[in-house]
Image (tube, rainbow, N blue to C red; front, side):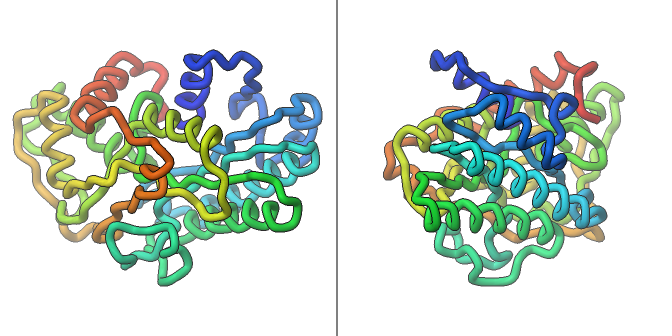
Length: 299
């Protein structure tokens, strides 16, 4: 999803010399294949968006996969980029790098100040390692590599799997299927009380290009909207976007995850960028894409 959005944005802005490979064409956990690709392509700028990602269920049940595969991808790409002299690189992480009980909104300097959320700590540790490697390259080699930490993302191309998706695409699938089947009730995990911030992936792509053109600094940069809603409010918005008219119930025996995760985006705002896609408009766009791409969904 993220890579596709960045590719679209760069194309729309007139960039033509773009090197893109699908997962089937290039396995970034294969160190030799990754180095061979960089030797052939010799990119001047790299955006590292590739990662194994998933929701609470996937992270909780497969922590080894999330830790090992993300570390392999990051080390291989960052080492290959350094080996071939990539001057400018943007590493994309995740807001889950911050402590579970970090002061809200979460500022960049909250990193490594507390205990991580246990349901996704393996993924978070991998992403923290990526930030540290980018900072190490800056210190040792003086290259202007940077890191950006997006909030929760959604949009066209998202993962709508029933077992590995994040909360918002999972809601879209659940509510749209309930509407189509005429189900009277949708049951969601948790209490609905945690608060989350969501950013449309096309806004993230615009932010990445902005940072590459206008930002240089060692500390990671938060990328988000600066606004959040409860999970229950999000569920209601998705039910409206899909046209579901039944009831919503909550299974409180299931985990909630982090109570709140709102990013302090003052660094990004101070650099001159802010999002343009509202959550309601973004949800309508994503529901439309979901319904039009049933055969191509990652399920």
